[in-house]
Image (cartoon, rainbow, N blue to C red):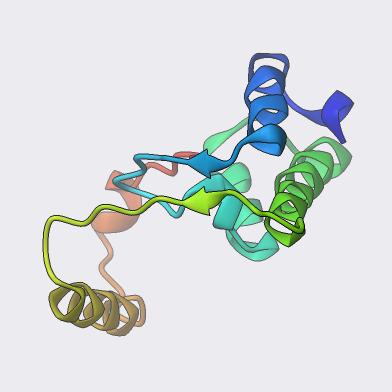
Length: 115
């Protein structure tokens, strides 16, 4: 898995595999460690020059990182949120509903970030 990662990211994955706690700030996307295969593929497909096998290797490597969560003593995922869970849940539900709305101009303004 490590060999298929972007060279600049390999050190982080090593640290992640040995960590007892992880902190991440991802204001625009789900943190890479928690991404589903489909979500990661959509991000890679929209934001990078990767295609075909190269993209699939990156997606597989990203999903394989989740094995750290299955350890006997997985790292704590430290979460800090400035607003209450109720407001967050309400916002997530609203975003899910908005995902079904087609906004023509927004398609040209959206930029995917691989996270």
